[in-house]
Image (cartoon, rainbow, N blue to C red):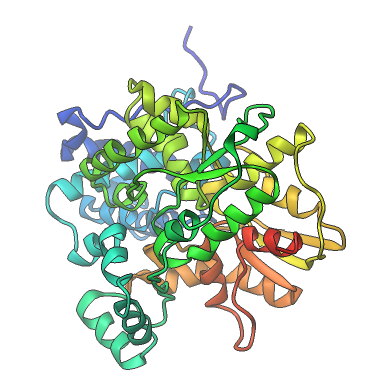
Length: 447
């Protein structure tokens, strides 16, 4: 008797390891065949049309083809679908009823990742994209004293931005982050932390934390790392730094440059394991970076024991604090209300499956009313700054602009600082810049 085709599944979803070291992984014909299979199933479902622009692009290609089916789409046009995917994972996590263990076995983001890896292997990657994904290199150069000031000034110059658009393909209206010579790691290192011998474990937490500053926290918005330190020490949690760190690898992953992801892993994982073995937990202030160690690296290196250990010992800051709150170890001595807050939860935080810990904590602050914004901002770190994608990214973010304008909050922001600035980019002149939730918490504590 044939097994009936199931519409969705009541079974727990699973994620297959990424077989990226297998030469067949880079077989372009095989990738095209798998894209045709998956695209045909997506075309018959279309539940994901409201997410990123990959799906409207795909469905338009189908509807405008001679057959109005996937077999009528030129396979060269498949790359248009791939280019619009920025691996937010929301289709896998929130929409698709055919993810594993369903027999159709659809993992759209990792299929797009495989296609990106094929594209990178072929050398079909723009110089612009290689530069934008080299966050450590750019941050170190732009963060040199004096140079940082010059870079920040010219990035605000309309004439320079027009030239940057022509030469590099960076949209003149896109928000470009500032660079700082007084880096996030330096701002933590200059303070003597609490006595680690007095750290109090609670639940899954050891009560002492090593900060993975991230490229963005180190070079672009170091005050976020500084606020993380202040908030954690206010909660009697000693903090330290990894002896060295590199980019988590997420920008290179999104480029399909998996060898560079592996190289970054070879620096970060040993540095993290040294501290984990000494009893420290790891916390990072940027959701994408935490997700890299919680999900993507474990799927790339399923047999690496250290990678799997780090997976269980790295935390989002608010996840960590709320785990301790469950054990009665959160400092709830708040000094200042936050009033009305428009809070955007980042896609890469949502797919960590930890719940809305940032919202839960901020709602503990007296006289604070929080509105949750769940839609994607369309930023993705690099997608929104690219000339050919910026307008589309702003269209994706438009519902968030409207919500914030309507609310007129005292504070607005996102766990992803880049998403916060993407929202800022669509607001009316005169509205204040975004405030990161860690900064909101530091303000609420009166620090």
